[in-house]
Image 1 (cartoon, rainbow, N blue to C red):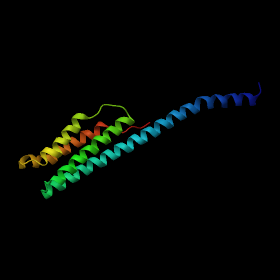
Image 2 (cartoon, rainbow, N blue to C red; image 1 turned 60 degrees about the horizontal axis):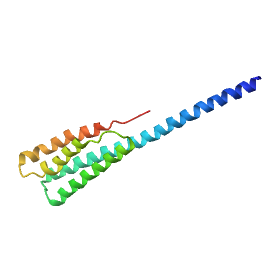
Image 3 (cartoon, rainbow, N blue to C red; image 1 turned 180 degrees about the vertical axis):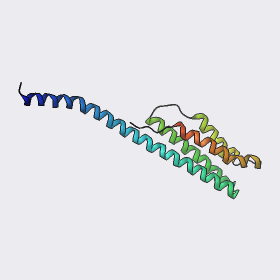
Length: 139
């Protein structure tokens, strides 16, 4: 065997082993990038819900339009969590979503001022665990 044959054999071996490994790592990187982008969208949606809740609470505008807006935001939150679960199968945060819905529809629009005053604090406490439920993934 000549030196050129040895070099050709080694390069073939490296190609046979290296290409599938790089394909797997590249695919995983793309999957994690999509997953992390979806988590960023979830964080933005949670921030939007908090901001809208603060505006409703500050302006004391407990109209039916705002109530339906909060229901729509909750549906968007559910859809975003479902999308993330399709990307990476894991548990669905049913309890967190149920508690958030209870806060943004019941407590925020309650007739009792004590419940309305604690709604924002409770919302902050419930949105944070929802975001932490989906940790970002890296290689």
